[in-house]
Amino acid sequence: MFNADAKIIQRMTPMLQRVMIVDPQPAGARLIGELMRDIARSQIWTAETHDKAIRLTASYDPHVIFVDLGPAPLDGIAFTRELRRSHLSARYAPVIMVTGQATAAGILASRDAGVHEFLRRPFTIKDLLRRLEAVTLRPRDWVEAVDYVGPDRRRFNSGDYSGALKRRSDATATPDAERLAQALKILRSAIAAVASDPAQAMRALQAQVAELRRCGMSIADLKLTSAAIDFGRYLDEIEVKGAPYDRAALEVKAGALLAYMPKEEAVAA
Image 1 (cartoon, rainbow, N blue to C red):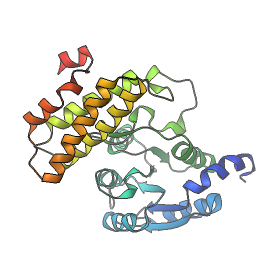
Image 2: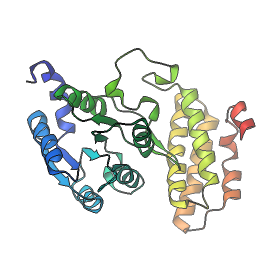
Image 3: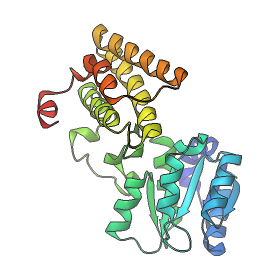
Image 4: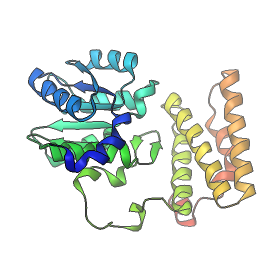
């Protein structure tokens, strides 16, 4: 059955060894489990409830997670959102949302929760392989913001799309200027959220510091790189001291970085 895709499957197999299936319906979970064993000899764990899914995910650190959209008796969107904002290693794992009723609202909500791909029932083995290829062999940039945590949404459901790229930002490698602008926008919004969501705001700030350092080195801008390093040290000091987050102080310390904000973005802010 898989002869034509043998080489692709061989490349994907190491990234499909541990699979979690979150589905309240045993028949749906069994079908996906059997297919994954045939494709990659995967180890399969199944969960029928939200709480069990979180526990098993923490214990087994799955490579890929299939989750039923729900909403009842299991809400796949809520599960994905909680997973993405958790401290589990599997928070970065590809999530494939599965449903028999794919509405525009459900697809958008899944995307905004941090889902990688969307798979509609009934699906063919080709449909499944395309989703698996997308999440294993065509990884997307990770976005660590306050309101959103997950893969870059600009290429959502890439397993469904095989045509020409729609815009410049869909290029395989995001241009340095776009990466820089996005990191600065997230940095600014994270500083604004330190009072309302301090834990995720700090995680977003630390992620953007790393991204800004990479941008600075990529464009050989020593001033940008140094500013990112200095701000990262300041964040580390706050964490070590356990001091409360001070928005005004963060804005001052981040000033050298925010000076790189594109003019139109600064005016909008």
